[in-house]
Length: 270
Image (tube, rainbow, N blue to C red; front, side, top):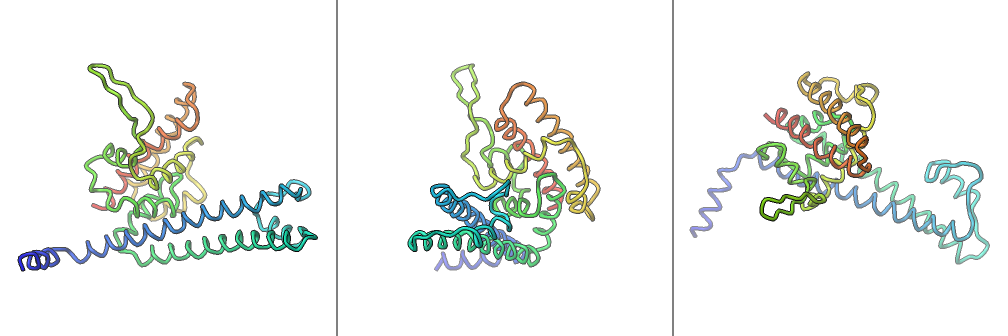
């Protein structure tokens, strides 16, 4: 009886808006991960089809880029096999590639609809994060869905630790040695931030899609995004000049990018 009363009191003390925001983040997380699964399935389907074509010497003439519309038309109109069993295998693999592409398209439409129906605070954070270079809508949605409210972290290093992009440490007495990143945090967050970090190898610039994404945002958010461009590009250049390989450099840039993500999200949530 006491437990029932305690649970009832706990439910009454919750704020409806907070519950809805939490449920929305959880639903977005499942939807974004479903798209990620579809992308992995698409990659496997393409690899299977590509191996069949390679084994039987089927290649397009000229320099045709794989998996484009023109390439798929070439598969449909020019690639055939005399043996019925092999033709059936080929057609099944082609159908799987098309199915995965359609699946990804439908999931992306569902993500767009979910963002439109999300609470105002979530939409605001998703829009604000897109001020950063390399962080388009899907990346911003993934960050919000995987982390939830970023203001729950006291500071940026706490978010970096949550992502697993911080160096491991081996300490013996006064000797401190740094190793590879821990990878103990959220792997989905680490992946999208790492992909976004590659954009900072280019010189700072605002234009095109990035300029359109920044329209209507607060000037302070734009200033943080510009500071991120200048600092992270400089960081990328210096680490590369020191002989670090690109993967190490991008990991270091991604870790600092999380600091700017935290700064923008905390300001927007406030």
